[in-house]
Length: 168
Image (cartoon, rainbow, N blue to C red; front, side, top):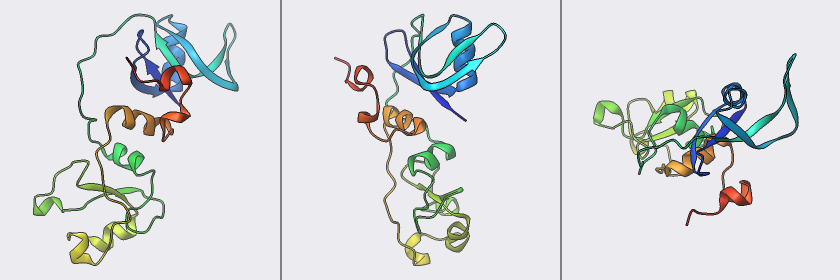
């Protein structure tokens, strides 16, 4: 599934949407394509459109300021690049470093991506109690970093020049 970055009319990143949703916004004249895939196109009877990577809304949308990226299981898997925090293999589940039964919360700093085997082996214990070391410590991404990770672009250098520059 392709993911498209949505920019506000002022070029501020807002969110990511599916390619289908991005095409609908462009066809309804609610957005314009700022960057597209070079060789991919969407074709229909009366439509020939490049597949959008980045779209910009035509009208400004006022968004309340967010200091923190909202926590989600999908967000943890994306943050950890679908790699197990214990063995480095492909992760399919989310593990709580401090188990929920011991007061651990659903938070960025208490959850890591994990493969099913390691999640089952750790069970209802802390990594120290289970004798399992974390390969990397969990961290809380900024909202902008969470959006870049969702796009599959780990660093700002992967963005176009006009978008990677910080707002003045």
